Length: 284
Image (cartoon, rainbow, N blue to C red):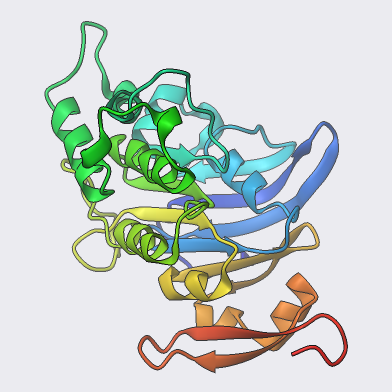
C-alpha cells in the first residue's frame, strides 16, 4: 500500500515502484506514494536522502530508472514537456541566473510555456505583474538580478514560478537565504494560493480550490506548520507519511535524522514543534 493520507481517487501524482538515481546507482528504490491534489505536501529528511531527487523526477528533470509517475491520471512519460510546464512549475534548489537580466525579464520567462509562436499572450503581462506584487519584488523589477541580495533573488525565483500560473508548484528549498519573516511570507503565500484562472478544482479538493504544492524544507517546525501532508524520507524510501502530528515524533526523528528531540504542540496552530536535544550524550 502506498504511504500517505487516506486513498485519493485523483491524486496530483501517483508514484509506483519508482526507482531514481544518477547513472545506475539508485537513491530512491521502488517507491509507492500518492501526492494529494489541492494540498501542500512537504518532504523532509537528512541531506542526500533523495528529497530533491523525487522533486526533479516530478518536474521531468530526471528520468526514472524504473517504475512510473502518473500526473493527473496520465503517465508522465507520455506527457509533452510544454504541456507539463503548463501544469507543473518547478523551482530547483540552486537556479542559475542568466547574466544581465532584470527582475521583470526573469519573471517573464515563467510565461514561456503559455506563449504562442507569434508573440506574448494577453495574460502574460498581468501574470508577471501579479507575481511581482505577491512576492514583494515589484519595487526592484527593473534592477538586474545579479545585483540583488540572496534573499531578494530567492523571492524573484518564487515570482517566476508564480508567473507560470500552473495548478501545481514544485519548490526545492524555497526559503533559502530568506530571513524568518520572509520565510513565513513565502510559505503562507504558496500554501493559500487559489488555482489559476481557468482551472477547475479536482473532485474532493478542500476549500474553493487550492493549488497543489510539493516542497522540500529543512526546518521541521516550519514544515509542520505549512504541510497538510508530510513525507519523511530515509533509507532509500518513505519511512512515514501523513498529517504532521502523525509523522513528527521521536521515533521518526531518530530514524530519519539520528536525532533525539522533544515534541511539543504549538499553542497557536496545534502543530508539532521540534526541540532538538542534540546528537551527543548530555547535549541539550
